Structures are given as C-alpha cells and as structure tokens.
Image (cartoon, rainbow, N blue to C red; front, side, top):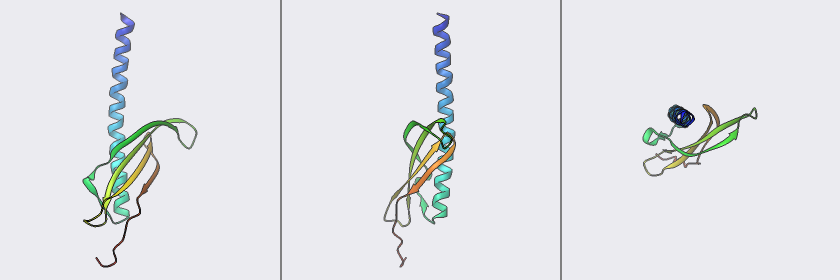
Length: 107
C-alpha cells in the first residue's frame, strides 16, 4: 500500500512539473514568435502560439531533450494569413522559420 501511494504522489508531482514547464516554454515560444514578426515587419496574429507536437530528440550536444514544435500565424496585410514555426529543446531555440509571404509594392 505504501509503494502505491508513493508512486501516485511522484506521478502527480511529475505531471505538475511538466505542466508548469510547458507553460513557461509556451511563453518563451510566444516571445520568439513576436520578435520574429517584429523583425520582419509583419503582424503577429492573435498574439499566441500553439503546440503542434512534442517528441524526444537530441540537442546540439547529443543530449536527450524534449523537442516542442510550436506554430503561429502572421500577416503582412489584411488579406492573407501565413504560418510560422518554432522548435524548442527545453527552453532553447533549435529552429525557426516563416512561410514566404508576398510584399505588395503599392500599399
């Protein structure tokens, strides 16, 4: 009985830690998305990112980390929406990219 209770408490502690860590990484991804949009003179739509996948992977040092892939939307006009992607290993940026978007010369 003691082992079962200890296992449940440990499981809940890990679950709470994972949730809190995910919230923090989401805020980091949102800040990166906003910065990318600002640097490219486009509008960061909805001021949010969403988690598209989470998987185990390796960082540049070969260490096992959780890779979280986030997506966001941006626009350079009122007419078209484009997608951007951010990959984070724990709290470090691994990669980021944005869809190619049209620049209207006559706006």
